[in-house]
Image (cartoon, helix red, strand yellow):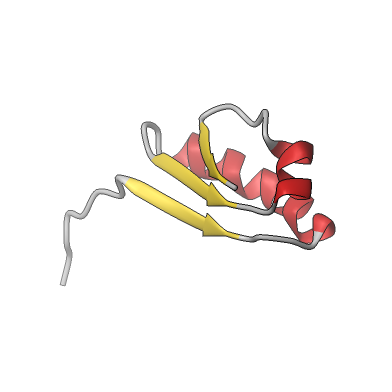
Length: 62
């Protein structure tokens, strides 16, 4: 069975663990490259937001 679903938005939930947060950055960039126009929202802790908060094309919820 084939479906023609289009991914419109993705939410990443990673509040803490700076190492894990930095490992997610290539995943975010791959998602952006593979799914042009996808809306990415990242739920993140305050400290981690200071590290990656300038990542383009991502909406952050702190």
